[in-house]
Length: 206
Image 1 (cartoon, rainbow, N blue to C red):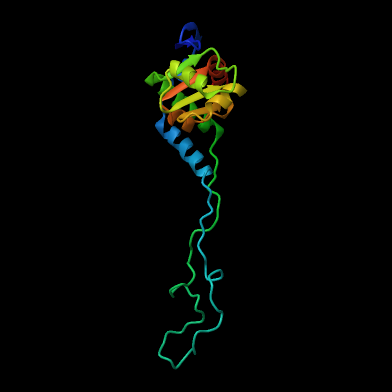
Image 2 (image 1 turned 90 degrees about the vertical axis):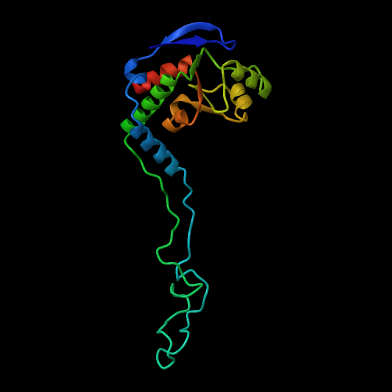
């Protein structure tokens, strides 16, 4: 597979060869799903909490006599059976993070990239740099490259000026190639990657 490499004016300045073993393999949606779910779970805050009978407000005194009142036998007003009592087995603060094998993560990224290449939404540019930290030139540059409402920009190391100019543009996500995940790739309608980023991904995923 071969993709054209364009410059900032959308002019073809070369091409990059893609390894079919990396970018043209089977699109395993189950592996992509597993990677996306793991990343979503790792970002959950897990701070939800309910009060058990030890934490809920209330006295520790027995409400009334054990026998002779005709009422049920109760030892505390904080019992879960009563209104305003504690919650039994309610959610407690926890971490939802878990890990999956690195081979699965790499396989998910390969499958996600293959899916986007098949859709024809990947654009390869020679470089992404900005002379100054201004948003307007970055917007114009991305527009020339076919940016949509959801655009993923990938480079080996993001240029400081370009990163500062484009990071606050709505719908644009900037990611270094070393931190790219299957969720980043699937949650976009346009991918703009530099030649260096594509070559680095091919090297790592090969």
